[in-house]
Length: 343
Image 1 (cartoon, rainbow, N blue to C red):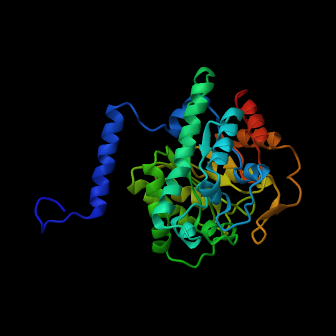
Image 2: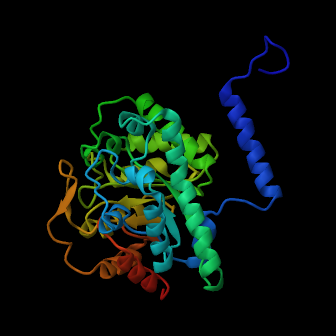
Image 3: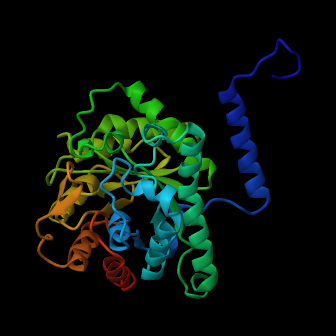
């Protein structure tokens, strides 16, 4: 309600005003968000972190669950903090929150209230913000390193389905359904203090456009990375070159790339993006093993050469941000960081 009982203001308008005030206050108080551009300017090659679930499983967590690593936000959030800290110590210039599969619908299906679901989504950012501050105070500020980015993971609609759809993209839902699914979660993650969205493992261009539109409306920033099935196509068969062209016009999209994809496809995919976009290219593939969406386990062998050798190829091909996805470890990220800082 506004000045008179009959005068009403829509809640979306109130949110826009609140965001504007937030920006003014942050600038006045010197609390501006960290930006990808600032970190890249300092590092040249930016190092992203590695797998969350792999490390949680090493610690004894059973993630054969529709919530996957998001269930640990409710059960043992301190373990998520330990994983974030291990990647900062290994050399990561940015961390990705444990919100990939943290959705309001997903938590509510498991018996949480909507308010509890929203709090758990905010918690994913709170945990990383605390670990970044603790690491920075303990060793980061005297190390010559960049102040790391807090990147809020925005997983695809297929991750919520928990049936491997993020590697197919055949959701059978409308663009409006996708928008409604992502909107509130993205608002919660941004309001919690994330520096940008990591819109990741996206299997179809339509969903990428939805996320880019929402990011732009929020006056926020993101990177968008696709899951890919070969050297030229994302998971639903769309050419990665077409995706890069389609996202080029979005100022809010600060980088475009690939994640959760077999390492041997990545160098070719980088070249396709580079030929069709001026934006920095981000790559954080998996280890090369294959994922079984039924058992939620990984099988097979890692993809030939060591991860650091692959990373050298990706940097030579034009990648500016390099990290790891499923089945990669802090040891892999340490090797990538050592490589990047020799460049």
